[in-house]
Image 1 (tube, rainbow, N blue to C red):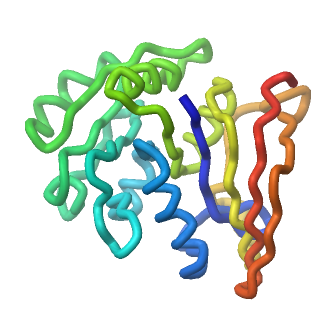
Image 2: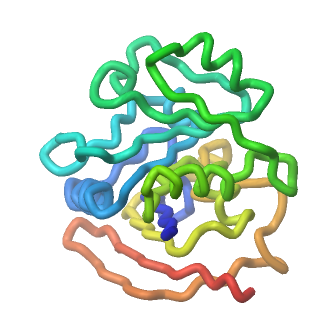
Length: 214
Protein backbone atom coordinates (compact mmCIF):
# COMPACT_ATOMS: atom_id res chain seq x y z
CA UNK A 1 0.00 0.00 0.00
CA UNK A 2 1.42 3.35 -1.05
CA UNK A 3 0.16 6.35 0.93
CA UNK A 4 0.67 9.92 -0.32
CA UNK A 5 -0.23 13.14 1.46
CA UNK A 6 -1.03 15.99 -0.93
CA UNK A 7 -1.55 19.60 0.15
CA UNK A 8 -1.00 23.23 -0.71
CA UNK A 9 0.23 25.64 1.95
CA UNK A 10 1.34 29.21 2.44
CA UNK A 11 5.06 29.72 2.97
CA UNK A 12 4.27 29.96 6.69
CA UNK A 13 2.77 26.49 6.60
CA UNK A 14 -0.95 27.29 6.74
CA UNK A 15 -3.47 25.32 4.70
CA UNK A 16 -6.59 27.33 5.52
CA UNK A 17 -9.01 28.84 5.70
CA UNK A 18 -9.77 29.59 2.08
CA UNK A 19 -6.34 28.77 0.64
CA UNK A 20 -6.42 27.58 -2.96
CA UNK A 21 -3.65 26.93 -5.41
CA UNK A 22 -3.51 27.89 -9.08
CA UNK A 23 -5.10 25.88 -11.92
CA UNK A 24 -1.67 24.25 -12.29
CA UNK A 25 -1.85 23.05 -8.70
CA UNK A 26 -5.42 21.88 -9.24
CA UNK A 27 -4.23 19.87 -12.22
CA UNK A 28 -1.61 18.13 -10.11
CA UNK A 29 -4.26 17.14 -7.58
CA UNK A 30 -6.65 15.86 -10.23
CA UNK A 31 -3.93 13.80 -11.92
CA UNK A 32 -3.02 12.25 -8.57
CA UNK A 33 -6.64 11.23 -8.12
CA UNK A 34 -6.45 9.38 -11.42
CA UNK A 35 -3.16 7.77 -10.38
CA UNK A 36 -4.45 6.46 -7.02
CA UNK A 37 -7.22 4.08 -6.01
CA UNK A 38 -8.76 6.06 -3.16
CA UNK A 39 -8.83 9.41 -1.38
CA UNK A 40 -9.11 9.87 2.37
CA UNK A 41 -10.12 13.17 3.96
CA UNK A 42 -10.73 14.30 7.51
CA UNK A 43 -14.30 15.11 8.49
CA UNK A 44 -13.36 18.73 9.21
CA UNK A 45 -12.67 19.18 5.49
CA UNK A 46 -16.22 18.02 4.79
CA UNK A 47 -17.65 20.23 7.53
CA UNK A 48 -15.94 23.30 6.05
CA UNK A 49 -16.60 22.58 2.39
CA UNK A 50 -18.14 20.34 -0.23
CA UNK A 51 -15.36 18.06 -1.51
CA UNK A 52 -16.23 15.56 -4.22
CA UNK A 53 -12.72 14.32 -5.12
CA UNK A 54 -13.20 14.65 -8.87
CA UNK A 55 -10.54 14.04 -11.48
CA UNK A 56 -9.58 15.99 -14.65
CA UNK A 57 -12.41 17.74 -16.41
CA UNK A 58 -14.57 17.58 -13.30
CA UNK A 59 -15.28 13.89 -13.85
CA UNK A 60 -15.50 11.26 -11.14
CA UNK A 61 -12.86 8.57 -11.59
CA UNK A 62 -14.63 5.23 -12.15
CA UNK A 63 -14.40 2.65 -9.35
CA UNK A 64 -12.36 5.00 -7.20
CA UNK A 65 -13.13 5.02 -3.45
CA UNK A 66 -13.86 8.32 -1.70
CA UNK A 67 -13.54 8.15 2.08
CA UNK A 68 -13.68 10.30 5.20
CA UNK A 69 -12.55 9.62 8.73
CA UNK A 70 -14.18 11.02 11.87
CA UNK A 71 -13.64 10.26 15.54
CA UNK A 72 -16.69 12.26 16.64
CA UNK A 73 -19.13 10.96 14.03
CA UNK A 74 -20.01 14.56 13.13
CA UNK A 75 -20.70 14.20 9.42
CA UNK A 76 -22.79 16.89 7.66
CA UNK A 77 -25.10 15.64 4.92
CA UNK A 78 -27.30 18.57 3.89
CA UNK A 79 -26.01 20.27 0.75
CA UNK A 80 -23.05 17.91 0.32
CA UNK A 81 -22.85 16.65 -3.26
CA UNK A 82 -20.76 13.60 -2.37
CA UNK A 83 -23.87 11.93 -0.90
CA UNK A 84 -25.96 12.38 -4.04
CA UNK A 85 -23.45 12.24 -6.91
CA UNK A 86 -21.41 9.14 -7.65
CA UNK A 87 -21.08 6.04 -5.50
CA UNK A 88 -21.71 6.41 -1.74
CA UNK A 89 -18.54 7.34 0.16
CA UNK A 90 -16.91 5.36 2.95
CA UNK A 91 -17.02 6.82 6.44
CA UNK A 92 -14.44 5.51 8.91
CA UNK A 93 -15.28 6.15 12.55
CA UNK A 94 -14.85 4.69 16.02
CA UNK A 95 -16.70 1.63 17.23
CA UNK A 96 -18.90 3.66 19.60
CA UNK A 97 -20.00 6.19 16.98
CA UNK A 98 -20.48 3.68 14.17
CA UNK A 99 -23.98 2.41 15.04
CA UNK A 100 -25.47 5.90 15.34
CA UNK A 101 -23.81 7.03 12.13
CA UNK A 102 -25.10 3.99 10.22
CA UNK A 103 -28.62 4.74 11.44
CA UNK A 104 -28.41 8.41 10.46
CA UNK A 105 -26.78 7.97 7.06
CA UNK A 106 -28.55 4.81 5.91
CA UNK A 107 -27.71 4.10 2.28
CA UNK A 108 -25.99 7.47 1.77
CA UNK A 109 -22.64 6.07 2.90
CA UNK A 110 -20.95 2.91 4.07
CA UNK A 111 -19.81 3.23 7.67
CA UNK A 112 -16.78 1.23 8.80
CA UNK A 113 -15.81 0.97 12.48
CA UNK A 114 -12.12 1.27 13.37
CA UNK A 115 -10.27 0.26 16.54
CA UNK A 116 -8.16 2.75 18.46
CA UNK A 117 -4.47 3.19 17.72
CA UNK A 118 -1.66 3.21 20.28
CA UNK A 119 -2.29 6.86 21.16
CA UNK A 120 -6.04 6.53 21.55
CA UNK A 121 -7.02 7.91 18.14
CA UNK A 122 -8.48 5.91 15.27
CA UNK A 123 -6.18 3.34 13.69
CA UNK A 124 -5.12 4.47 10.22
CA UNK A 125 -3.43 1.10 9.71
CA UNK A 126 -6.80 -0.58 10.18
CA UNK A 127 -8.41 1.81 7.70
CA UNK A 128 -5.70 1.06 5.13
CA UNK A 129 -6.03 -2.67 5.75
CA UNK A 130 -9.75 -2.41 5.04
CA UNK A 131 -9.07 -0.51 1.82
CA UNK A 132 -6.49 -3.11 0.81
CA UNK A 133 -9.16 -5.78 1.17
CA UNK A 134 -11.22 -3.74 -1.28
CA UNK A 135 -8.39 -3.94 -3.82
CA UNK A 136 -6.84 -0.53 -3.09
CA UNK A 137 -3.06 -0.35 -3.55
CA UNK A 138 -2.57 3.44 -3.35
CA UNK A 139 -4.25 6.09 -1.20
CA UNK A 140 -4.20 9.88 -1.49
CA UNK A 141 -4.53 11.72 1.82
CA UNK A 142 -6.14 15.08 1.05
CA UNK A 143 -6.22 16.64 4.53
CA UNK A 144 -6.65 18.39 6.78
CA UNK A 145 -3.88 19.09 9.23
CA UNK A 146 -5.01 16.77 12.00
CA UNK A 147 -5.39 13.86 9.61
CA UNK A 148 -1.95 14.57 8.12
CA UNK A 149 -0.50 14.57 11.63
CA UNK A 150 -2.21 11.31 12.60
CA UNK A 151 -1.04 9.56 9.43
CA UNK A 152 2.54 10.69 9.97
CA UNK A 153 2.45 9.88 13.69
CA UNK A 154 1.22 6.36 12.97
CA UNK A 155 3.92 5.84 10.34
CA UNK A 156 1.69 5.01 7.37
CA UNK A 157 2.86 7.76 4.97
CA UNK A 158 5.32 7.04 2.16
CA UNK A 159 5.52 10.42 0.42
CA UNK A 160 4.35 14.02 0.62
CA UNK A 161 3.43 16.24 -2.32
CA UNK A 162 3.43 19.82 -1.09
CA UNK A 163 2.64 22.88 -3.18
CA UNK A 164 4.20 25.94 -1.62
CA UNK A 165 2.06 28.90 -2.69
CA UNK A 166 3.40 32.48 -2.90
CA UNK A 167 1.19 33.58 -0.03
CA UNK A 168 1.47 34.42 3.66
CA UNK A 169 -1.19 33.96 6.30
CA UNK A 170 0.13 35.12 9.64
CA UNK A 171 -3.04 33.85 11.33
CA UNK A 172 -1.94 31.73 14.26
CA UNK A 173 -5.43 30.24 14.43
CA UNK A 174 -5.40 28.96 10.86
CA UNK A 175 -4.93 25.25 10.26
CA UNK A 176 -1.38 24.14 9.55
CA UNK A 177 -0.19 21.46 7.16
CA UNK A 178 0.38 19.13 10.08
CA UNK A 179 -0.79 19.82 13.62
CA UNK A 180 -0.93 17.63 16.72
CA UNK A 181 -0.14 17.47 20.40
CA UNK A 182 3.57 16.72 20.19
CA UNK A 183 6.59 16.37 17.91
CA UNK A 184 6.62 13.65 15.28
CA UNK A 185 10.26 12.80 15.95
CA UNK A 186 13.06 13.66 18.33
CA UNK A 187 12.13 16.42 17.69
CA UNK A 188 11.63 16.15 13.93
CA UNK A 189 10.52 13.56 11.41
CA UNK A 190 13.08 13.48 8.60
CA UNK A 191 12.10 13.79 4.95
CA UNK A 192 14.10 13.13 1.80
CA UNK A 193 13.65 15.58 -1.08
CA UNK A 194 12.79 13.71 -4.27
CA UNK A 195 12.01 16.63 -6.58
CA UNK A 196 11.51 20.39 -6.57
CA UNK A 197 9.93 22.34 -9.42
CA UNK A 198 9.20 26.07 -9.57
CA UNK A 199 6.28 27.18 -11.74
CA UNK A 200 5.51 30.48 -13.45
CA UNK A 201 2.62 30.85 -11.02
CA UNK A 202 5.13 31.45 -8.23
CA UNK A 203 4.32 28.08 -6.72
CA UNK A 204 6.96 25.51 -5.83
CA UNK A 205 6.02 21.86 -6.20
CA UNK A 206 7.86 19.70 -3.69
CA UNK A 207 7.95 15.93 -3.46
CA UNK A 208 9.36 14.29 -0.33
CA UNK A 209 9.86 10.71 0.70
CA UNK A 210 9.21 10.04 4.38
CA UNK A 211 12.28 8.66 6.11
CA UNK A 212 10.76 5.84 8.14
CA UNK A 213 14.17 4.81 9.46
CA UNK A 214 14.24 7.85 11.77
